[in-house]
Length: 331
Image 1 (cartoon, one colour):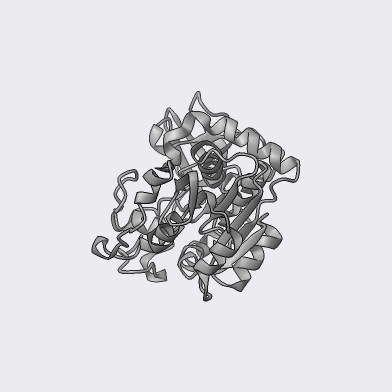
Image 2: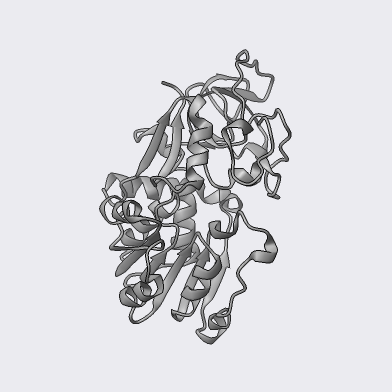
C-alpha cells in the first residue's frame, strides 16, 4: 500500500515491487500463490476500520486471502504439495506461520478447481452456507430473498437455497446485466434490479404472501423495507451492509420497521465466518458434494496477473460484473 485511500480506492494507492523470494524459519511454510481474491471490505483494511484485521501502514503488503500450494515447509502442520487457503497477502510467494492470525485451511477436495478455494470452497462459500443454512435455517418451501445477490457470497446463496428446497429464491442486484446473471448463471428463480423503478412494488409482486428468509448483504433502507414485509417467524441473516460502507455513521439509515421482529415472532442475527472455523471441513464437503451434483455451478470472474490486483478491487466498487472476483497469479 503506497497511500491511504480517501474515498474510493485508486490505482495510486498501490505500488508493485519486485523482491527476492523469502526464506522460511522453523514453524513456517513457503506458499506459491495461485489465486488471490478481492472483497469490498478491503477498503476498510486500508483505512484501519476493522477490529479483526491488523492495522495497515504505508509500505505494507496489501492484506488479502488466496489459494496457494506449499513449496517448502518447516512446519509439522503442512506438507509440501498441500493446497491452502490462507492470508497470503498480495504477493506471488507468501510465508505462512503456525499462527491463528493466518486462518490457514488445508483444502481436501483437490479434485475440484483450486480457484474454488477463493470462492465456492472458501470464505465466500462458507459464509453463504453458514448464513443460509445455519443462521437463517432455511427449510423446504421457504420463500427467500437475497440482497447483493450477484456478489461473491450472494452468487452462492441462491444455489444453496435451491439445494435446500426453498420454493422461490429471488435476488436483488444492480443493473440488467447482473439481474440476467442471477437467473441464467446463479440459480435464482427471479431477479429485481434495484437501480430500476418500482423496487418495493416488485417485492410485493414476488412475495404477495410475505418473506420467510432474507439473506442481507446491503443493509440500510432496503433492510428496513424488507422488515415491513416479513412473515411470522421469518429469519433475517445479516451478512453485510455495503450500502453504508462509504458514508459516515451519522448518515446511516434509521430503521422504522424494527418492531416487526418482535411483532412477527421473528429472528434477525448477524454473523462472522471467522467465528466458525471448526465447521470449515463440513462446509467444504457439503459444498463440494453440491458442486459435483450440479446443484452449485460456481460463477467466477478471473483476471490475470498480480499487476491487475488494484483494478480487480477498484472495479468491485463500480459494480461491474458479478460472482467471485479473483486474480490468477500463476500464469
